[in-house]
Image 1: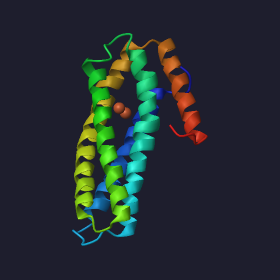
Image 2 (image 1 turned 90 degrees about the vertical axis):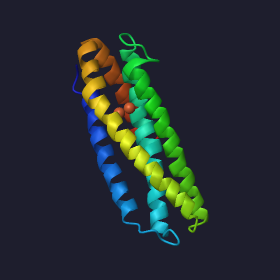
Image 3 (image 1 turned 180 degrees about the horizontal axis):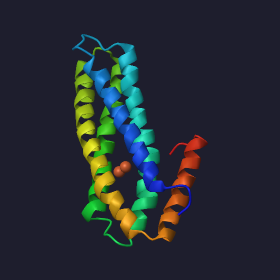
Image 4 (image 1 turned 135 degrees about the vertical axis):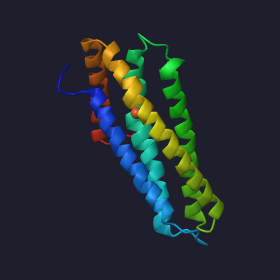
Length: 175
Ligand SMILES: [Fe+2]
Ligand SMILES: [Fe+2]
């Protein structure tokens, strides 16, 4: 394998995601049931939605769904088992992401839409629980499985695909 270790990089990204989740949770907790949501908070919610769409589902998700999982597909079923579970969790995360985005849009128009804030808060809880558990399973089950199943050559192919995705990200093309 070359210098680029795609699995190690996905794990580093997981670590960044965990930090980002913690930061957003703290931002939400700091907000004591306001009559209207201050615009910096609306911005934080919108930015979190953007982070989920772009970084989590967008770039990171592309590397898993377009590079790593298809390579593992030679050894494991893709519509069942651990890969099937990961894919369905990606789908669930996208639903929560959309509810965060919709909440941010509503609050931008109407800062007194406290029900939209409540929706964002419950999505935040759901995302934190789901993503923490998802990362745990990838780091401790799926990725070790990938390391033992994939040949050197297959891992090189995954690395190449992931590097191409990272390059698109660096040139700021939308995912
Ligand atoms: Fe994943
Ligand atoms: Fe992941």
